[in-house]
Length: 630
Image (cartoon, rainbow, N blue to C red; front, side, top):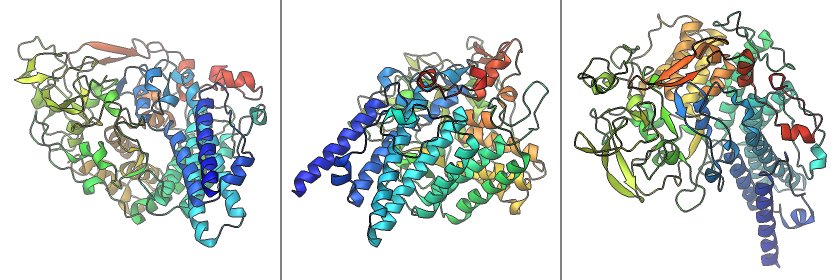
């Protein structure tokens, strides 16, 4: 009899998972199977049952967090040349990101994320299913030895829910808030949007419960901890502080002064902004000082190696390949199965070249990124790199030429860890085996470069290709990596704390910890510490923090959300109705993209808030539309 019940339990869970996966591909916001008699009688009996269901919730959430790097294509330093296509949406690889436009940051991209909205709610229902049923187990007389474990499982599920709603309101503002199992679409056919103020309280409650109930160490790779929950609570406080600001130092009469003017149901409150900055600083400081978590390889820069050589690379590079999966710096993230599982990550495919397992190189660092890497000698920016036509006689020897390898010497170690310029080499792989060490030269796709085989980077249009995320060892295909993709790293916690403390107490307030942690992040690039006299004002220190966020978190999915919460799209690119637009070049001086040329104010407004999917509004008359999309 026990074996029969086990079979029924397995059948029920597998059926549930399949139905939920299939239904989330449909147009309906949620279309789930009800929790019937089979579930209550034969399932939800043991800790193993609860844990098994929790794994399904993690898998559902992975679909909406595991390719956040694609969002950087809507910023100013990553060229992401496409969208996640149908062929990339098998298993749970792309799914939520599919059809999102990443290639043009001036294209009113907020109408491209209907799938993301729908898959987010599919994940919400997975999570609510776990929370509600495990709570029922607790209320049904779970013994004391099981109570802590079951509460911890609820904590993980509630942290997932908090993360999902954090993302939902960051993209759409007011959204329907659902905190129970949805058994039929009739239950939500008329549910209105919930104000972000109400959802804020629910998010904070979820993160707080997780902080109180989760263990300090993960139960397994990819499982959440109390420190990750506290870090996310601090991050959310910081975002709330930004949304409640009534002005920014760079505000102009043309651009909005603060708040979130595209969300007409929200009024910023400067007093609440101040309190939220302080709350963020408190939470994030506690993580920094009490968690015992340290930066990868203690934050040491490692060795640069030799110009043009890839045998020795700085430590920062090794943080972004699967050998770092168990490092504590990767505080919150999502696991992938690796070769042969159908659940591998797409990092090699998205960032590698034809020479690395036939990858497609969807993403490339822009020429403008190279200028952000500072001097290891002075700790400051260096003379701008000059794009040069390679046919000019001194193109590869001219001082500060983009094609002269010497122009890149004595730079932030994270540069060599992140990108390849002309003359740099990398290990290449084919058919899961070592190929050879090849050398990169922009637009040289075949033949040799300085006696090395050329790297075929046929998709490249910037003059640089990625090293970050691209594995340097064989054995995994382009879509079959098992990297534990982080959505929260300790370095991000450092920089989030510095930002919050700077606004709450000033650069030198709170015992100078803000400056100290920024310098720790800079140290991994082998950069000198910041001079306190130079960064004594809130504004100058803010720009130092932004600089570190640009180079430290490049292609990890943070830049777009930073620009939005700082009201900085106009500051970074151009104000509305400006001609001839924001022009972006390659290392040969070729004009590659022109953005924001006479772009209307309406287009800017649409980039700060996404549209509610029309298909959902057609079904639900109570789903109002965000004002810029009316």
